[in-house]
Amino acid sequence: MTAYIKARIDSGTLVAGNKLPPTQALAHQFNLSENAVYRAIGVLKAEGYVISQQGKGVFVADRRKVIAGPQRIKGIVQVGETIHHKSSTRVTPPAWVAEQLGEGECVNRVRTVNRGDLILQASQSWVHLDVAEVVPEILEPAACDPTWQAVYEDRSGKTLTVTKKELDARIATEEDITDLDLAPEDGPYALVVVRNIYAEEDKVLGVGEGVYRPGVPLSLA
Image (cartoon, rainbow, N blue to C red; front, top):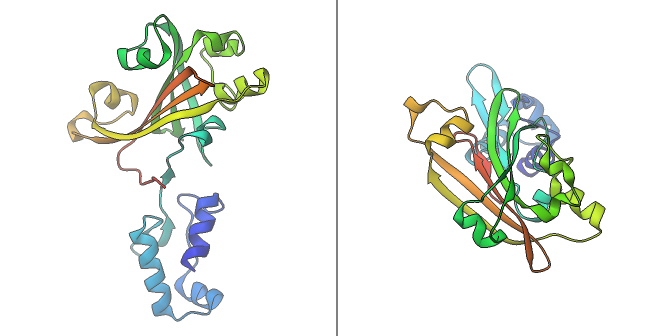
């Protein structure tokens, strides 16, 4: 039962807020005793898949997978989410990005991933200007469908690889609090940070950083 429900949640068939069937219905479906169903629900709760609401039932938890590495090239949103692109600007990159991209200007793309009005993730990427020759859309304040990396691969016929990915954490800065629309008075906040470096052969073409909203359970598998 737990494997079946987890698989449906992981695949997006069951989404955050969906209510699980009553205990008796689950017991009948899986040929279990009600005590066994209670234990299974306990496992799902412990692993962050579901939550209980007293007097209402058991519901799928608001839980996201961290998308990183090669998967991120194919898209950064999940079921029920949208991208809100904020800006695309030619900038001189911060020192840690310049170490990867090289000296000179690049394109800084800033966006959030939302579920309704809730900001789940604040992301930005620094993209080499060479990419603009193939994907001029990166200079426009709009999202690339599904990502600039995927569009670049499709048009150029070349393959981008993730040469490095990092999972980190930090205390939220003032910029993080603004980007994620957090209440400053409720801080300090601890944030999960994911960084990816994208390269064509030995040339780095992009560096990305995603900062995840605190309080939303994440699957780091």
